Image 1: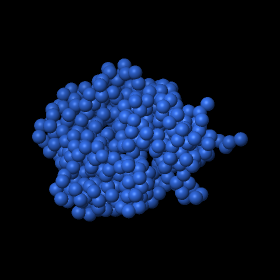
Image 2: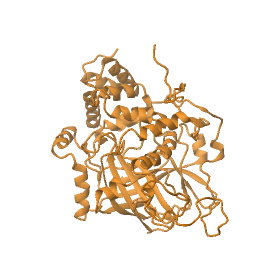
Image 3: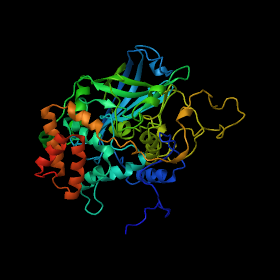
Image 4: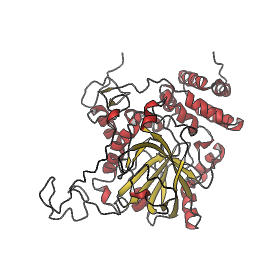
Length: 481
């Protein structure tokens, strides 16, 4: 008989699959103590490197506006065609440690910090438009499968495939991960995505849902698995070196910035949950709209100060931008800032690389490594009667529209049951060589996985497309029933 799952205090946990939310589409509720405990504990499991995205490279650059999107957003960042804003980028692998190879089969983190006149705005995304899970309550579980077995301290594909076989919402991202785009040829030759659904709010308070796309102007280039394995041993810092050298010699990489746009009315009537990060929005139905481009044109002078201490968080929003009820995004809004407070320290936002370049004022005081004036003799509470003290703006910028609220409860995120149509559509887009590479990559990863797990996995792939599942089975010399 299995043990009861409990929290650290011994409280029985009835549902470890779904966060509490206001209605089926959210937002997530902060009174879900199990979610908070899982995320907060997870952020403190390792010191001192990042628990995920530990190995990375980055550079400074400039974002330039090329199209007018003021009908969608009041953000000053976008208010003038030709306007330039300084940015910081960081690219990374996800699952490996700080000393791991740049050429691993792994999603790539794709993070941007815009130093705007209204504060810092962060897009913390990946090089894939989707993710493995829909709900942040499963994030610690998923990442544990990408790390090391507690007893052996070795990585084990059994953990990963066991989790995938029992979490079919991951199949879309799995198909991308094991495709030819699973190992980008450095950081310059890959697209980036915000992945989640975000929002823009215009001067009239009208909200539009958006997805951010960053399209490489260098073209897409990927590594053959054999070449990647070779570089793993001969030059594990291949992508880091490539990015630094390109910028150093003046070959500045560029990405076009685009958005997909969905109105609130379209979101209400969409066939799928538009806030489900395991699915994409059709570009035929919601085409890309140009916004601008960014160029990386300056390497860091000191890696630790400017890249290792760089702290990105999706909670860094500016007026005219916003979040969405995406349950993964909601969890990250808490978890990323919390991870930085633990990893770097309570006052991490004072560090030069993280500090806003615009004026800022708050009532935060004290804490480890406070190295400014600590507010001097000014008041440390609010409200107060000092006319010169910081005051709230009272600008209307609601985080969520009222019609997305609902009864508090735990809602099953798997009610739609459609785990297969999106990876099926992706598989159909692939040519014969891409399909063959995908099948080979998955079959190779499954070689040492337990038979019962392999059978569960193959059953999913067959449902995506018989050619897909049977192709993998054939490589493994398995006859499907």
